[in-house]
Length: 159
Ligand SMILES: [Zn+2]
Image (cartoon, rainbow, N blue to C red):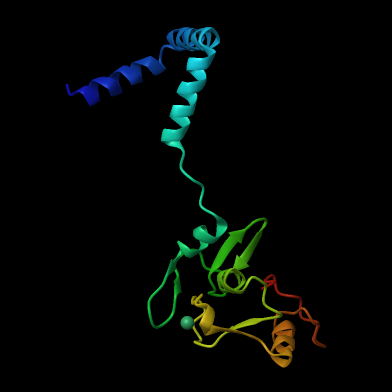
């Protein structure tokens, strides 16, 4: 039996011994009470060794993008039913290309955001352009934000 296997088997057995676990926990907290400074230092060492910095929302976003020099930057994560990239952004699920625009220019696009490259999973900022007022109106009517005379129900997609 290797050391690793021996440890695994000990841990398997240990899990079946709640009494031993309780005793260890009590000993540990007694030791911590009696040696507060050492316990504090040990805690700090443990945290320093195990701390993994949390990625920012921006890092999380770009990690899902396959960039290349020329050509489209492909969204590699989840897609909406209509074929656009999408990402959880706080409470909402947003279109990935809109988030790419926001992260690049520091503001959300006015109205619709169109792909100059015609590739819905592309999030490359210089392949995107904001819709003109006319395009935005067409887009809004297509998505049912403006009810047409046929009384079509608004679509469930907001972006
Ligand atoms: Zn593109």
